Image 1: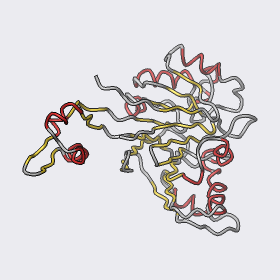
Image 2: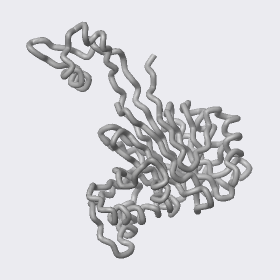
Image 3: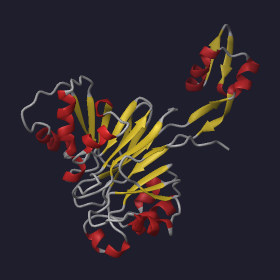
Image 4: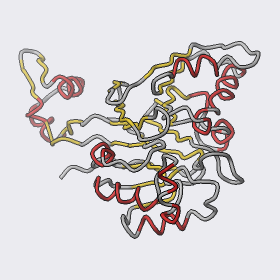
Amino acid sequence: MASTFKITFLGSGGSWPSPGRGLPAIAVQIDAVLNLLDCGEGTQKQLMKSNVSFMKINNVFLSHFHGDHFLGLLGMVQSMSFNGRTEELHIFGPVRAREMLSNALNVGYYTLSFPIYVHELRPGDIVDMGLFRVRTMKNDHPVPAISYSLEEPDSIRIDRKKADAVGIPNKLIEKVRSEGFATHNGTTYTIDQISAGTRKGRRVVYSGDTRPMKEMVEFAAGADVFIHETTTDSSFEPKVNEFGHTSSRQAAEIARDAGVKRFFMFHYSPRIIDVKVLENEARAIFPESYASRELLEYEVPVVKSP
């Protein structure tokens, strides 16, 4: 289980930048693996203001190819090259990702100093990232779009008193945790002998852009953190839905029905000046609703076992 699972909101707006509000981008640090959810225009500048280094990004997960969600990738890749990056970068996105990015990443004159691997994902795909896995779901948006669920695996908790009582060598504990047993000097130690139960892995779900979907309730069920777009408040319904988006009222209902622990609103229309209006509307439905904002950090707490 990771010791660090931290979210940093870099840009919380949508459509076009506005003073004090950037375009969609969220960093998710899982131990040494740094992930970026979408990469709107201006993301690299926001990264420089944050506690996150753009040079250390390992994976970028793009929800779709509307410009406000990926145009910041072009400048960020070139800045990585100018700063001598050599480590590979993995970019994930929906269908046509290779076609879209092969054109975009070749804009301008520069020399790429590191390998980039582009992976096309389809709804329902599961990708094993080692420390965590990524699941996808199809969104209801005018262009191909997917939601992401970043999921830490469950972990067996070790009871140190039990381990000391059976005399298992410390060097074998992780082997027993991962494989279920280990033999040393003729003695076999099992996980049942030293287990203190299961510690449930943490989970962050990111909707990307979408109309309200009943399928999202199942996809996000029980998530520790649920980040769902709230383009406007309910006064703009049904117009906001016609354009493939969700109101704060509708997103809060999804969060409530999914039984998530914490819901962050995201992707505000430039027409929304005071996001407190959205937050108040959402909290009336789901009290654990919070307005994301630029450079807000949130450490996802470890789930305590009963």
